[in-house]
Length: 559
Image (cartoon, rainbow, N blue to C red; front, side):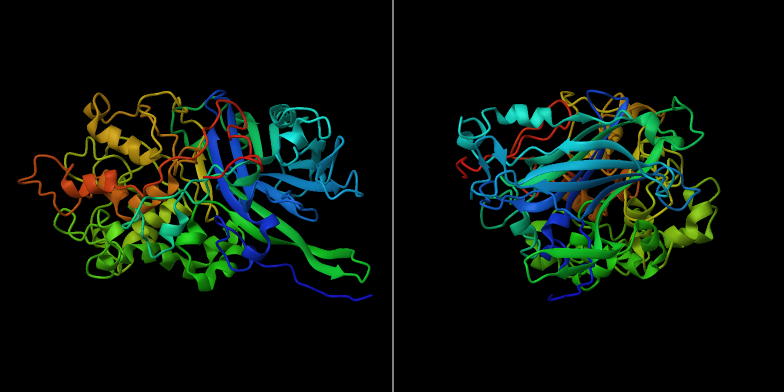
């Protein structure tokens, strides 16, 4: 027997193929993570973890499917007083060749590979797991009409296969695991061509259009996700008891032994090889030399590794939004110019001091009073906005309230519009489950998420006429969770460009309170209207769980 001992690939994913090692293990590669209050059933939270990037619909004869000997997990943290996950959903998959005598994936009612899954749930921090679905159905790849609809195939429709795979767990969750259209949308070619988004020499192109992905989607009652002792009804739409953190991962056995007869054995401890929380973190914030190291730790271990904080304090992307650095070399980012003299005093470009000078003043009643040592750091200007957005969530506290009602003073109380503060662990999606969902047919619904909620709260009556807490459309959008429609690439680039600072009253340089009639200046409008050129998915989302479009067929014409 030839025995080859291989340590499991140590890598994780923050998006499609973003870390060197996980790019060689696509079956375990997280592509995207979503968490949102279900628009058609507000008592439920939908969590979607996608895997296997860049699936060609015509990828035969060995079509894509979930891997065996992989633990695909969705983790939920709901209690900041306890380090670690409170709830974990664990999926494992089994594959069978129903007819190994053919090279076709589907023939005469049989599938190769036919894939099923077991779903286990832990509610005690991972100490014990209970099986809540056995032999769950994974729909086959949408190969084409002869394989799916024809008499020599499965003699059905793909819609019937797809909808028939939606399963109710013994504990009440709705579950779907299988191929779907990849719901992410981005001009990857342009972004990685040194930030050429929108493209300066031609039209933008959604690089993920007409590619598929495999999804693990669960719809969970809010009551299941609440921390112990939380009230069954929220006190208000920003109730801190209703904040959860969500992250997804994949793990493999530590050792794989290849045998001379073509089989293999696995053994050893399970090793995490992939994880994902906030979109694009590892892809566009963590430098290539640290991507694999970043990915092999949990969010709780990552939070303790403070050397990585520098990538948020002084993000590389900000260098290309600064005319004194490399801004001139990246004309596409021209509208995104970070504040260098906000209110005549505060510079947020890399290496500047941001608002750290406030540490010497009266900070009573602000978030800085308790967390000033983390948020007000000289030479680390984005410790005040980007770092907490990605690492702790944002509290409903001064200064993190809209400028509406502040009357020009950023340290005054303003209009609440976010509270997803969960200072436990690092990179996660944080969602306040008390915030109502914005109806998808609401004229104010926007793929800009909280950026649009802030714009409405600042400029649109009646929202901008009071500093009172009220629901503003899109308060349920990224980075308060993540909806399928949210244009996360655009939002994160706007955030690096200082839009969050402006929203709370740290306006752009061209605002002079003595001469400017409104803080909605040209610089702010440039950031708000910035676009990468790809603003929505290529396929329409649906109005019911699992909300994503069915996978593209292998016989459809690709444009």
